[in-house]
Structures are given as C-alpha cells and as structure tokens.
Image (cartoon, rainbow, N blue to C red; front, side):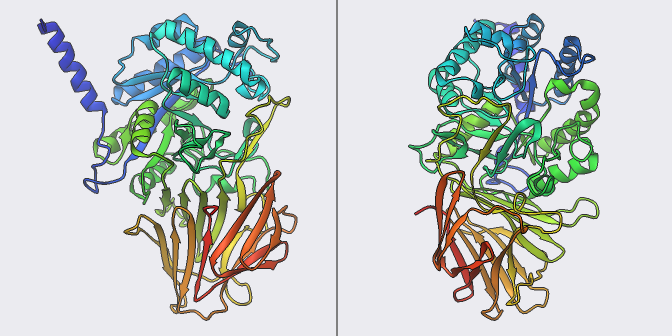
Length: 551
C-alpha cells in the first residue's frame, strides 16, 4: 500500500523536480524557441600536488560549498569524479546521498596513480596525479590498456553507486575509449575542453565551436559527417569560451590566455559585467538548433578562489531559468535529449551582438557537421576570421598509438585561421574588398534564420549603395553583394610569416594539405585566383558560393 510517508516523500520529490527543471522549448519567445542549455559541471580530484596549501580537506570542502550553493538556488548539475576521489570514503558518503533528481554523478577521465596501478600498469608520473598527456590521460596508453583502465574504473564506480555513470568527460579523450565506454557501459554524454592553443600543454583548434557534436569513430575531436561514421555519444564543449575575445589571445600561434565562464578569471566568469553580457547573449542571440554553455569549476581551484564568481553566476542562472530563458540540467540529460533530437550533428550558431561596455564588436559563429565559420564585425569592417573543415576520415594521432610526450595537439582542416595566420599587426581573415583590396565598410549586421533553416547575415555598405547577404547552410557558404560594381572581391589577408596549407589554386578549387591530410574546396559560383601565398575570390553575378560539404 502507498503509505502517507511514501506519499509525502513522493510529493516532495515531485515538487523538487518541478522546481529545478526548466522549459526546453518555451520561454520569452514562446513555444518552439530553441533551448539555451546550461550544464553546471564540477569535477573532483582528490589531491593537488602543485600547491602544498591546497590540501585534500580544502578540496573536499570546495565540493561541499558547491553543493550547498546549488541546493540554495535549486540548480541541477553534474559532479564528475576522478578515480582517486571516487575511491575516497568522504566523497562516496557526500555524493551518494545527493538527490538523483537534482544531481548526476559521472566520471572525469584523468588517470591517477591508483587507477593505473590497479589496472596492472606501471605508473610513470611525477606525482600521484600528473596532468601530462603521456601519463594522466588515455593518450599515454595503448588501446588495450585503455580498456583495462575503463574496466577498473567502471567496476569500482558500480560498487559505490550501484550503477554505471551516464557521463564521462575529460579535457580530451580518444575515440577508442569513448566508443568502448559507450558500447560496454552505455554512457550517453561526454565533454571536452574548449578550443585553445597550448594552455596546460593541450591544443585543440578548429573544432565544433562550443555547443555539441557527434565525433568521428577515428577521431574524437573531429565531428563526423555520417551516422555510420560517428560515435553516437554527443561531446559537449566545456568552459563557456568568450566567443569574441578568447580566439585572438596569443594571436600568431602563441600560448593563449583564458577568457571563459570559469569563475576564477577576472576577464571572464569572475567579472559580473562579463557574466551578464555572456548569459544575455547566450539566451537571446540567434542559435538555430540550440545554444549551450557549461558552468562550474574543478575543485582544484578551491572555494576561496571561485566563491565570488559562482555566488554571482548561480543566482543569475537560476533567475534566467525561472524566467524561461535558460534550460539548466545535467550533462546526461542534455546528452539523452541530443541523441533523441539529432541523428547526426545539427547546425548551430552563437550570435553575440549586444555590447560589453564600450566594446561594440559583434561575433557570429556557425557550425555544421561539415565546417565551422566565424565572422567578426568591428567598426564597419566585416572579417571572416575562421573557417575550418571537418572530415571524419582523418584519423587522430592517438587513436591507435600512445604518445611519449607531455603535450598533445588536435586540429581540423583550416581554410582560414585568424589566429595562427595573423599577427599583432595583421588581423588575418577573408575580407570583402574593393578593386584595390581595401576592406569595404558595412553597417551593423542583422541576423536571421531563413525558412530553410540557414543562418543569414545582412548589412548595407556604409556608403549606402550596396547590400551584403551572407548565407550559411549545412554544406555551403554564400557571400552576395548587390548594388556594387563587379570589381569587388573577397581577399585573404594574412601575416607574411604565416604557414598556409594551399598547394594549388585553380579557378574552381583550392587544393590543400594540413598535417599530411589532403582536402579540397570548390566554388559553385565565383572563382579562385592566387593572391600572394593565399587566394582571393572573384564573384559571379555578384555572388560567391563555396561547397564545403566535400561532394
């Protein structure tokens, strides 16, 4: 019989679930509005060997404070356990009693000494947890060894929680491990680091910007183009990267700084004005299928450093959730929704047009399973800052082999790279220019979604005699200018020292090679011609159309 006590418990659980959940497709724009998803993801390490003052107790109390703050604002979220924390009784007791309707417990895939040794492998690290790629990540082990590590972790996770985790994430993960975790243990979601150059020894550059994608079976960083070629586990991009400023830090291929939603960074998530700018653009900018960010912080940074940022962010996220502007849920919930909603990686966009203080620059990111592209509008100049192609047949260096160095690099296929090909004196990119090669100047762009689902930028020349229409479709990019003489063109500008991938420029195609991977881009309208070591595009009937789908 359903007792009074059971009924009360059920009612309380239902009330809590209703309170922490948020509408996925309803909000300030009404039914059918694409969701703006926030995952609060905090991952947990047992120890911090880089700083003696950061004791195990300090790290534990950081997690306690994170939980208290999330409960105070009825925010759901995910805690990901590194193996050393998984086997610690304090974390077991703390996390196992959390309400499952609010909190998810998953796996953080850095590999500390206890896990490696329990799998029967030799520990080669400097400390019990070592962040080098050849020691503390799956990339330091053979595929067979990776399976042993996964089996040990999953067995012990099951012993603690009575189930396997639905989410396993890491700064980077290989396709062999990801597929194994899905096929044997049924994970439904993963996450990896934002795009960055050299930070902490890891470079991830040219991937699906923010949002989420299905990875190639051969390369977990590379989005797949086909259902047959993909691992059916969406990989969400972590840390809430500033879509305008993060890209250009360390321009020229130098070590990048960090401008993200992480609550410890003064230029990002610790600054209330930046947080307002980021969340408001996230909630209100055009996004196509959905918009996404990850909030939260690993406990290694300690509560003292993250408290001010999280205590500012979490009430704002909760308020926007309550107003229907944001969907806040666990990583696993987002993964399950993604898998049900999209048989292949969808097209998405990030549109940041509202200013941050006196900075009125605007940025527009578009992703599909075939390519990513970014435009920046700055005081009248519209620059195509980035264009990278995706190819599921490009095999990752770490798929079959382990690495013997501390750093790793992951890339896709560049057609325009505003960071590596730029310098302090030259903002690299593709520019609409006049016959003399001077950038044309445009009014503030307007953004819309067409009836066919394309992402479109429109603007007028500041002289008033021309109209610009940029149309981004899943496998095509179109730039059209009306009202201008035929002499306008689209010109690639780079730093003189830039290393470019172009092997051959013909009228109808670019033939390229990057890191031993050949690729080709063709025009459907307009034509290529050589320009220095790069190229320019001549319009046909006022339009340039590129085929970016590899067909």
